[in-house]
Amino acid sequence: MNDTETLEAGATRQISDKEATKVAVGALIGTAMEWYDFFLFSAAAALVFNVQYFANENATAAALASFATFGVGLVARPIGGMVFGVMGDKIGRRKTLMITIVGIGMITGLIGLLPTYAAIGVLAPVLLVLLRVIQGLFVGGEWSGAMTIVVENAPLHRRARYAALPQIGSPIGTILSSGGFFLMTIFFSKDNFDAWGWRIPFLAAIPMLLVALYIRSRLDESPVFKELMESGETEKAPIRTTLKESWKQIITGMAAGMLGIGGFYLVTAFVVWYGVNVLEYKSSLMLLGGIIAAAVEIPVLIFGGRLGERFGASKVITYGGLFSAIIAWPAFMMIVSGVDALVLIGMTLAVAALSLPYAASGTVLTGLFPAKTRYTGVGLAQNVAGMISGFIPLVATALVAAASSHWWPAAAMLIFLSLFTAVAGIITPRLSVDLPGFKH
Image (cartoon, rainbow, N blue to C red; front, side):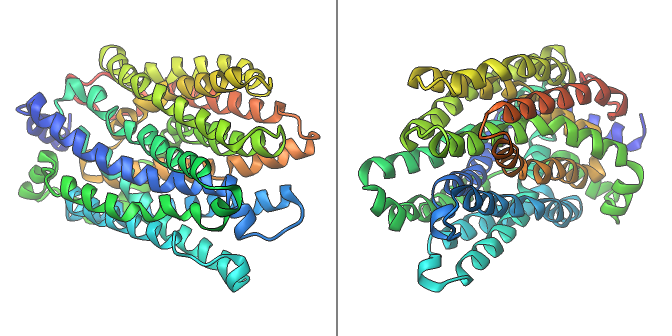
């Protein structure tokens, strides 16, 4: 062990489970807010933006433009990961997380106020893309910071358990965002939903932001970062050092996180679009599928965290990836069956399988980087995965269109992503930081 690793082991030795739980729940509230805002855009890209912001008589072309806008926000994420990663490694995890949550909430509210193409013409999609880019910058610094502050406020031998908790923000965000749209489709006619009903879930982000801010303001700073500050061990050039010394870790971490992000976008954003526009299912059915899948994901994530604590997070990523690859084809066969119950089961199975590696990804990514560049390193790895993943619904839409609207290219993509992440799980232990009592 080097000096930084000794410092980290010492700083986390006295942390109680009560303290660790408090920080993990505080981080979870913030990530739920983050994913609510981000998944709102995902659902809106599949259901609304292709109609209201991208005027095109060809439904597939409009969907491609809409999903491209979804992806553009993810291109901004690595930049945000670097900007806020540097801040987090220099001024602290807690201060940086206060900035990112405000940015995400405010941008979401502004999207809810944005005029449509019919009202202001081409300026509407331009502004939508601009807001999406800015949102992506803030999101780029959110997940990595939340995960870093959680693992650094947890006992080393229990990191996998607590690192799984902020991941629950993803299904909670999905339930709230899909649930918001689901209620709007029930309460409003299609014309009213398309005209203004879709805006209500976006505007709801403002009061949610106030709640998230209050809870996050009560978070404790990471004891590991406090020790780094007091000993003068903080990194002066986090980006340069990370790119120079940890480039292998960035690539491996990106692969480890790919299934949990990209696979999820495939089974939610793309499948919702495919079900509504190609299979002619009701929007409410596809949104309900997303809600049920997300609800089942919560206990799966908790279970994945416990497995990581017991056997090592990298093993959960490897075996979870293999399980997802096996499940992918049968899940898609159920989704295209035309039987409502099977559609819901197929979506739920696919999301549950890819959630096992997602539960362990925070533990693995934070374990790849030393404390003094952790926020930056995790931000780069996670956000490169997020950037690539953002274009998966776009690629799936294009490939399926090229295959005469058959579903097999999408299923093949899910199998590839699953195996890609499984291989990363095999590689990560040998590239990780050596910390006593921490199971890779």
